Amino acid sequence: MNTSIIIVNYNGLRYTQQCLESLFLFHAPDTIEVIVVDNNSSDGSQKELPRLFPAIDLIPLPENRGFGAANNIGAKKAKGEYLFFVNNDTIFKEETVDALRRMFFIQSEFGIVGPKLLNEDGTFQRSFGDFPSIRNELAEKRMARNYSAQETTSEQPLRKDWVTGAAFMVKRGLFETVRGFDDVFFMYFEDIDLCRTLAERGIWSLYVPTVTMIHLGGKSYGAKDRRIALEYRRSQLRYYDKHNSRVQRFMVRSYIIIKYFPRIFEQGGINQVKDLVKMVFSSQQKKY
Image (tube, rainbow, N blue to C red; front, top):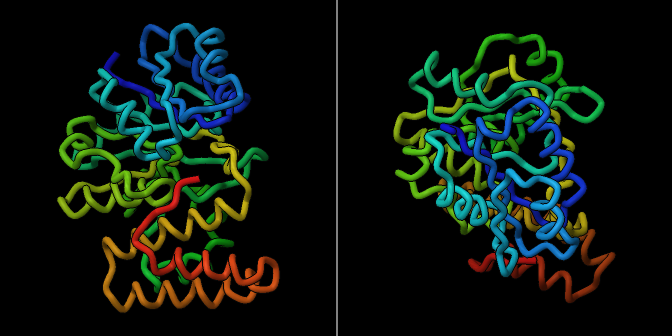
């Protein structure tokens, strides 16, 4: 078992069950180590998952520690030379583990590899990109409609700034060297932050379009859309504060205020406006 698969679950019993069923359909239980870290679910996951899948090692947490922190806990328990972090709302379509692991021998200069992700209907889903900056984020929004035509036809592995943590494999030694995911990111941007930390050491990420998985998207957590959107922005600010210039930090904060202030003021009133301002200017990261 030289590969450990780590899945974080939070009130996602149905999706985690589907993910594990597809995983074991293509991978024999005795060839991989599967660790599920449960972020204090209330939907029966902690009882049902070990019953349905005796081969997994379930780690129950007493509170929701967030995505990155929970993955770090799973990684500390893992025994594999390679760590394969997989969202619980992904579905395996083929023998994925060996296919990705082989890329480390073919392309030895890379530290992270990620497969092509597809939406549930089989259409292309962007799972990579350039490191976030105001310029890059605006450019990627303009280019998003062209990703499907440009990238789904490629059969060659491509070096990317980052590949998504929804499904990526990393060498265990590298992961431990940088102390895993920075758990200041409760959810979102922890994967991009890790890729950037490794890239600053000259170790890059590889997108592998010949290996595919389905990613349902947005099913990995049990929270309302508005709260998830705010969590995304909170982690975005954390990323800019950690990696980008003062001008960039000012610009992203201005953008968030301009975008959300009128909408929140109209829908939520003065208290939610205060929450928005506090989120933009506070160094404290709220957990839901």
